Image (cartoon, rainbow, N blue to C red; front, side):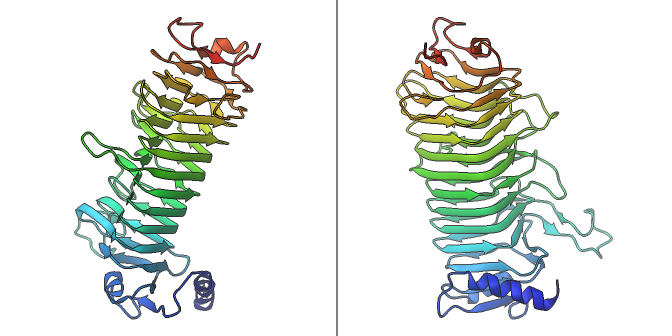
Length: 395
């Protein structure tokens, strides 16, 4: 792209930005040698313009600013440090646009003596972006070479559009969590996660083994594609307690091969807590061992509605329901308002399976089943008298 075209594209971007009247443009490296020095010099609402190519981190941001990559080539913020985040944000409103956040460090193309191949972002950091008590806006941002927690938002707000999560440029290994949301609001559109090495792409209100019970998270995920882990377990999306979640037009899939999945711990979506409301619609769950996995023990208060979704080639079950003893799941025509219209196709496992202690009946009217009659692909009271009934026939 010519310099004139670059400046024209940048001008259009800035015109669309809600900049303060007194905001300044700070250029890296034209005016400041590093992004951190520009951030330190910036005032409220200022914009840091970052040239294409590698820029060393890590960054610490505690003021409300914009950081914008210039040009078609990526502007890369990289920082191999082992433990720690590439970008840490405290109590601020920060927008990143046109940026790659890379946990590796740049290996100089001229360094012939280093053990790492030249010209790569080699090694990894443990975290990518960590934002606490902040509003984080990500537009056309990618995160790569991070071993765990590629993006974390805690007690804040996340708005992400066209976010791409990867694991490695150089070292291919497992990352536990891609996007971690805790006691926050999040609106995610156009997420792309093509890696086979992230166990849980989106993780909401996970308390950990001894962690806190988080305050409410309100999350919407739209028009996204998530590749399930090739390892023995993992979830495309996983939610715990106190979550309001909408999953709309999301494609979760697993490619063939990889490690043998462990039991039901490999899913498109998994609910593992109480006091949560979940709507899943117009989404596809292809070849993941379990499409939707609902843990709903006695005394809990979850409400899960599934409609107009496709479940295809799920080895264990399209929908798996554990210990449901109250009317908390609606697959069609029930009191929670599901419109049904779910399609189960080419299923080696069950379309719907109720496990032990799932004693409540599950409305599932108006769906398209993989076998006829549908009882051939459903595990419920007909197979175990102690279970509830999947109500697919109104007669």
